[in-house]
Every structure is written in structure tokens, then in C-alpha cells.
Image (cartoon, rainbow, N blue to C red):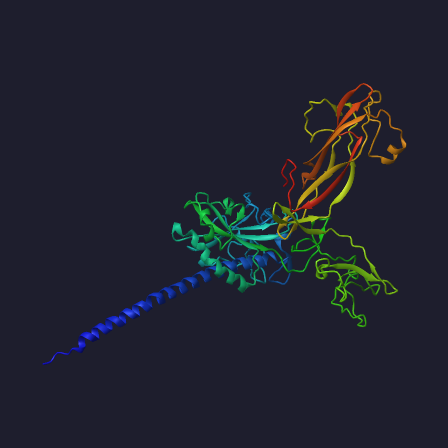
Length: 549
């Protein structure tokens, strides 16, 4: 019987084929595993974003429709709500500001201490909302994917705004990362593309996402901090580029997601709708509608055509008097205009105009508070600045007794001295998530170095009454030896709801030489000295010796 020589070669061929299949299967299996892991990450990000989307939807609802069709004020904006939890607001208005640690945030999750039940329908077990709503906002329970052994879990929610006025400027969510191994903290960046897709699917506009951390030994949500490098926030998706900022395994890491509240909603005059607007209401110190009407028949907004032959309403139309009102309109650039683009930006020039009964175009008058976007150099770096229009006022000191005269070695407390000038401090707006701070500068307006009259026990001048000062003949005029002005933060007693009112305290010292006897004295806050005070709001904080809250 003959042996087959082909059998050995067939076995070799089988081994070669299996080897080729193995080479192909290794990357294919790795690809399949990556797809499975990516799908898992996408499910996690979709679930987290859905929870955030539902809460933002609740925040954006000024009124809530109950199951029986009635409209109820959202408790987040309800003045005088008996549950103080709905008044919780934090004050880190700037995106770079450190997280607050005052326990005015909302703890999230299903565990003990969670405040999520304040926003779930009363039909849900444990709900504290006390409203049965027609629309479902938050689900009764958090999805198990992000609550039971999760990769990422929402731990804390911050509402940035004013506690007393119930405003909400921004909503921040802090989600904690739960790596399988201690050394996998950097893997949090793997979720970046998945979250961007989830936000896109939900049409959510994310302002910024930053990396946060806290020590593992502190379970409280008050201990979260922003991870920074060179005073700049480390953004989500950039952690791998800043791996040196990860301290050690004793920290938990997470992501802070920040969203503008109520962006794109119709404006309301009660201040409950906060979005990027250009008008600042000085009465309630909040943003408000840029156009207001004295009564319901005074103002109608339309898309009127520019062709005068078409009988359509203008932008502003008085329906009662059947006449056009003063309007803001964009002035177009004439075709033969010779000024260069650098000198004339036609797409940013709004002209307040109207036509008189003869067809002549005349300029109107605009009364408003304007926030100006400007810039300046700090060394070679161009820095953007927001500021309001400066306001100038005249003031005079009131010191008028012998106690204001001090020696050359005098050291006193300018906040407690007599005769100081006290000016209410402005409450400044927040523009594009940038907080504006109150600023002040002062300069001498008038000065009369009158020598104190020991017989009358007064100064024979009073610059608070300018007309009488000009008429009366001033005696005992000495020589001025210099003036020093100082402005600081202070406060005065307020009301029961606002115990302290923030103010500016301005003090001064005036050196006066008496030529009759050659003596020199220092007068503190004398009424013979007046100033011009210039106030404004700026995104650049001033240094006035004390902090502003």
C-alpha cells in the first residue's frame, strides 16, 4: 500500500491558513471591543445628558402646568416660598471663579441627603414638589446606568444667581468619575466625543466643561474644586495634555458642565428670564427687556418693510395714536460712501431716528444703561473688558468742629471719622458670564484752606452750598499744604431683609497753614473741601482695601 505524500502538505497549509486568520482576527476583535466600549460610553453620556436636559427644562419653565390644567409659578422663582431649598443660589458668576463651599448647592442622586426629590412629580415616591404636573420633567428615579456602580454620576447641581431676587444666570452640573482602577483617572477624557454627540442630539449648548476634584476622605459635595494650571481651568478633553496636574490616588475627579439658563426665551420684565441682553434695569438691578411700553396699546413690534410705499407698521407703532414712534434702526452704508471700513462699521451702527411731518430725518433721544465692550493691554496681552458708562457726582465733606483738627502724627479709623462722604455702592450686572465690579475714583473739585475760627467754633465756609459760598466774604484764609483722598468699601444699616447696604466711604485730610502764627494743622473731612466722584462698573476688579461680596 502506497503512502500519500499530499497529507503532510495539507496540514502545513491548514496551519498557514489558521495563522493568517489569527492575524486578521486580532485587530478585528480589538475593533469590535472598541466599538462595544464606545457604545457603552455613548449610553452613559446619553443618560447623563438626558438627566441634565430634564432639569434644565424645569429651570427654564417660569410656570408649571398641573395635571388639571392650572398654571403654577415655578417654585425656583416664587417669592416667599416656604421651602428655603428653592432659594438656593451660588455666587461664582465668572466661569473661572472657584466653586462655593457654603452648602447652597443641590445634592443629587438617589442616596441619603439627595435633594432631587424637590423636582420630581408628587406622584413619585418621596417627592417634595407638591405638584402633579402635566409634563414629565425628571423621572421618578435616576437611571440605574448612572446610579448603580456607575462610570459617571451626577453629584451636585449649582444654580448661579441671586438668592433674594430668585434669578438664575447659569446652571452647573458636577459629575464624578468612577474609574475601575486608581490609575485610570485620565480615561475620563475618553468620554469627551460621546458627550459632544449627546449635547448635539439634545440641542443643548454647553458653555464650558471643566475638570474638578476633591479629596476622597471628604464625601461632602462642598469640597469640590476646579483643577487649574497657571490659574486657568483644565477643560474636559484636555486632561491628558495636563497629566502633571493629577496629584495622587487620594482624589476623586469629575466634570463640571456649565449651561446658560433660559437662553433664547422671550424676555419678561420681572427679571425671571435671564439671557444675554443689552439692557440693565436700575430699579430692580437686573437685566430686563430692552423695549417697554407705558400701556398695552403703546408698543407693537413688527417686521415692517423698508419700502415707504408699503403701508406696513414700523418697528415701533402707537396703535392708539395711529403714528410711528421713535425706533432703533440699522443705517445702511451708501454706495458712494468714501470712508474706509476701518472707520465705519456699517453692521454695528444703530441710529435712533424718526421722520418729522415734513419727511426730515431727526435724531431721537435714548435713555438707557449701556454695557460697553472694550479692551486694553496688560503688557503685551490684549485683555477684554466690560464696563458701564461712568457717572459723575458732586459731594462735599461735612466736618465742622474742633475734633476734626488733628496733629501730624494722627492715626485714626477713617470708617468711623465724622464728616466722611457716604455714597451707595452700585449693584453691577453680569455680562456673558463675566461679573462686573463696582469701581470709584475721586478728585478734588473745590478747596478753600480756611483756618478754623476758635471764637465761632466753626469753619467760615460751606462748599455744600456753592451759591452762598460765592456771595459771602471768606475770612481767615490760610495756605494749603496738600490734600489726601481715600475711598474704601463700607456699609450702613439697612432693612430687616437686607441688614447691611454696601457703600463707598470717602475720607480726606487737608493740610492748612495759618500765616498769622505760622502754625500748620491737619483737618480731617472739613466742609471746606469738595470732590467729584466718578462711579462705574467694570469686569476688572479694583483694590479698595476690603473685599466686596
